[in-house]
Amino acid sequence: MEALQPEGLPTPSAPYSPVVVSGDLVATAGQVAFDADGKLVPGGIREQTRQTLENVGRCLAAAGCGFGDVIKVTAFITDMENFGAYNEVYAEFFEAPFPARTTVQAGLAPGLLVEIEALARRGR
Image (cartoon, rainbow, N blue to C red; front, side, top):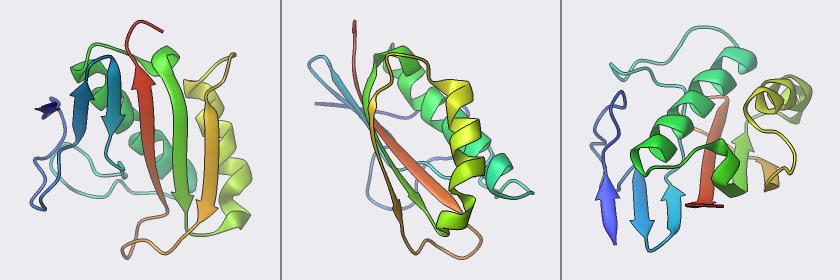
């Protein structure tokens, strides 16, 4: 297992790795809408979803893959009323054939509206 720290992501203070590679599998930790300085991006669900997915993309790139290699996404949003806006931004990052996806409503840290993790296979 290889743990990676992607460029452009703050180093976690908690005991986890932003992305882990095991063989041809790549797993990202749940990413949120923090910029490279660790500050929450301003705006609502669209802005947070975009930054979150850009952070997921940084994790994938560090492991040598991209959104086309993702086989499963798990997303947590604080309010299902935001699902439509979240889904619109999500569609900017993924294209058919789409990965499997689960989206659940969950409590997140104050200010956070969305958290997304991905499982990818290099060379898909």
